[in-house]
Amino acid sequence: MATKRNILLIYTGGTIGMIKDYDTNALRAFNFSQILDNIPELNQLDCDIESVSFDEPIDSSNMNTHYYVKIVEVIEENYKKFDGFVILTGSDTMSYTSSAISFMLENLQKPVVFTGSQLPIGYLRTDAKENLITSIEIASAYNNGKPIISEVCLYFEYKLYRANRTTKLSAEQFEAFASMNYPPLAESGVHLHFNENLLLKSKQESLIVRKDLVTDIAILKLFPGISKNVVESILNIPNLKGIVMETYGAGNAPTEDWFIDLLSDTVKKGVHIVNVTQCSGGSVIMGHYETSTRLKEIGVIGGSDITTESAIAKLMYLLGAGLNKEEFVKYYQESLRGEISN
Ligand code: ASP
Image 1 (tube, rainbow, N blue to C red):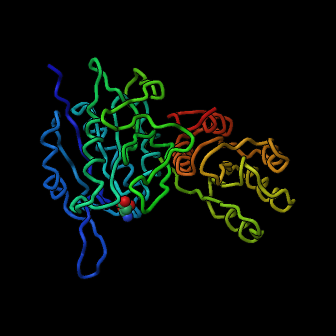
Image 2: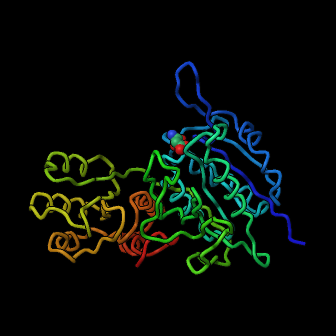
Image 3: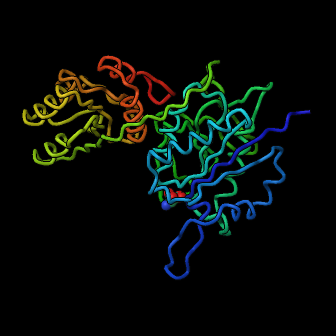
């Protein structure tokens, strides 16, 4: 007889557990037990489910690194006891949060699945039930005593993605997320089909939970006409440690001297600048066009096909790891959790 798996459900907030406040007409976070009451089908699943909830559930717009630490601590404390973890958060910042958690859990050997929904669980047309039920099935999917998934994933609307490859694309469609540079890890149809060759292999080492994240970072998004004043102000933010610079196409940026000189001075000061593309899909290839050659020469780090969400998470994580400059550049460009193709 198959072993019954133990799953821990961690509820942080988000639409999935919200109700309408009829005084204001706005959706607000509600009590977690309400969620379980709304899905009696959960009792039919062949696993034991326990749950913990943030005392005050949040809209994911209020997510921050203190909450990231709270989430990994719940996993750390319960790691031995449970076979899989399902984390419910709001979808708005789910790609940022799940990317960060993927870096914070080193040598993960159990499934961690993020999910949520576009409509609250109490609504007739809700997408919450399917998302939650299938996420629990994925978190409890084991083969020969080993979990099929041993990484941080995001499940939404019939697809399981590597979390640190995702981006929220739609505030309207049930299919809210995309993973433009990495195929889905699993698809749910009549059967739950895992693309096993795409999954991260679990390392046989103990879990290390990394909690030091540095938040003195910024995103510099380029646009035609961006002024020297704006670029200069961002690059001179006091105590700045790192920047994700969103460039055009394959990593291209203006070649004007004032722009390159400002970036070059910033790199010389020890601030890490990572080049990611504004395009939803594809990769930065510095040196491919003349408009990125100088970026490479002055020491801007090529972010390859990493998403902005994951680039931010990786910056916070590696800045907290106490690396020297060479190590930082090396690790940033390497795949640590499958977040980047090299
Ligand atoms: N505003 C909500 C949140 O991110 C949206 C959602 O849950 O999908 O918390």
